[in-house]
Amino acid sequence: MPDCIALLPDHIANQIAAGEVIQRPASAVKELLENAVDAGATEIKLIITDAGKSLIQVIDNGTGMSETDARMSFERHATSKIQTIDDLFQIRTMGFRGEALASIAAVAQVELKTKKADDTTGIFIEVENSVVKKQEVIAAPTGTSIAMKNLFFNVPARRNFLKSNAAEMRHIIDEFTRVSLAFPNIFFSLFSNNQPVFHLEPGNLKQRILQLLGNNYNTKLVSVKEETDYMNIYGFVGKPDTAKKTRGDQYFLVNNRFIKSPYLNHAVTSSFREMIAKDSFPAYVLCIDLDPAHVDINVHPTKQEIKFEDEKIIYAFVQAAVKHSLAQFSVAPALDFDLDAAIQQLPSIQQPFTEKQQATTQSGSIFKGFTEMHQAHFIEPSKKNELKPWKDLYELSELNTEKPIENLSLEFLNNNTDEKIIQLHQQFILVSSSTGFILVQQQLAHERIIYEQLQNSLKGKNIPTQKSLFPITLTVSAADAILLEELSGDLLQFGYCVEPFGKNSFVLQGTPADVEQGNEKQVFDSLLEQFKHFSSELNFSKREKLIRSLAKQQATKTGKQLTETEMQFLVKNLFDCKLPNISPDGAPTYLEFKKDQLEKMFGK
Image (cartoon, rainbow, N blue to C red; front, side, top):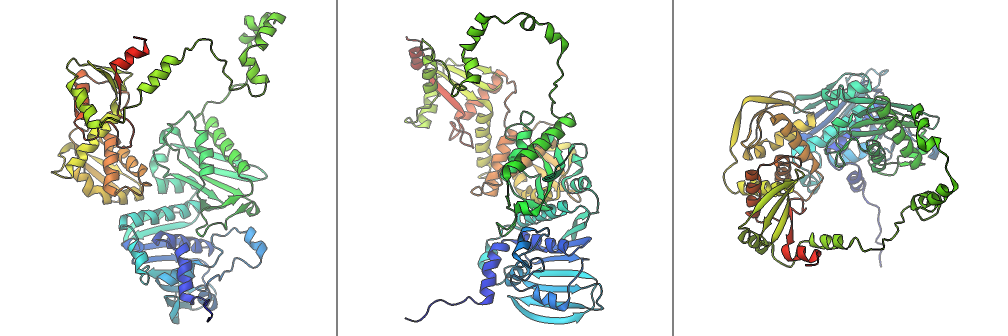
């Protein structure tokens, strides 16, 4: 049989490598910006057209390249950062593998202009499908300009997998934000379709945070700074009232490189325990500096996932630094170890501890829990079966899944002729009937009602908009502005009239009639956060995410006092739904308790 193993042609091998490095326009943006930083640039300009599908151009004033280096930069694994294997473990630059330009040239049409400060002329190189099409001497300023056009022009299947322009542009802004946060001393600018998006003057880290994440953080940041022989940490965390439902404003920078680390995220979040809601996430920008020998950044093609030599040390240090800063700035309570003199006068201190009292104490379960092994979670059994009724109640709380929900709803309504209705703990609605009672969770029930109303509105006419007497101006981040532009058409169908009003600003002209007047801005801000909360659910369409977000935002919240009329209206509308028993997220909206089961619990 003839030999069947052959080396791949260079252009195919480059395309395979590009599949790891260049997954979307934002991937190329990251690589090009990092190259500009490594070149020692003090000014970096990013120009985008058609969300990077038509053009991505990065212009810097860095050191530039010679003619030989410019030509070599497009070869695979061509790098100036690595000479020996030891260099791989002492990396402080952003790029080092020498794959970025080779991968970009394999899937785009690339034009490179570069000039070194000592050279009188620059060099122009045009590459397409990994092949150099043109190379010539040109006049150029010191630095490098690299433009990649028509991304994935030669891989149409990859191009078809790209998302909408708005979605791809949000990813580009994410990468731009991560790099510019890591280097606040460098000027960065971003233009999209000839419109300015960012103009970031050099400054300190706090100034860069406010430039990127918004001035609403101006008085909401707590400084973090701790230094040890092993590592240093500095940056800022947001005060508890800035916590959001999404992880958007969370940045870890290790040796100026943005990383993703759920482990370290947990270290920060745990520092905010008891200060923010369980489903909220604190904002932070934290920079960690340590010896590169203690971290491995070469574990993933994008270099955003890294490994620490000792993760536990890093975790403990981050957690302690954040806790210390929160306490130092009176955001979290600090422990007071000064002993109150009045405590010394208490009888328990003054009176002697007799042998009989010692014996009684030592025989108790509390003492054993601290002094004996395997006793900390031990519960002494009761002589009487006092927990039996609670077991029955637990069994009652489970819905009878054998009976179709339509029949259950119909049965309840038909037998509910002597209805009595009350609200419990401003959270539950108890509805009695001749057959027993049901316990409705008011917020989850209302979410189900609104969700089905919005679904029905897609099949008929739009939900009417109530025009605001005084329109509200909304100023959002650049990423949120792109998101709002994308959602404005769907929002209008659901009763929200939002119109652009300058850079990153919008005017809220009207809201659905049932939205409380005077609270429109807070409602809309929460709606936007709620939508982003669903953004990781890839199996949901954009419209489904929006409907679920609106249902959560508009629903009657736990803690609101309801009138009897409001409760009756809510219960009636719930049982008019197609699926009254579960919320859009799958949680039960009510539990049913039968009269005969209740009697059985009391031995009747």
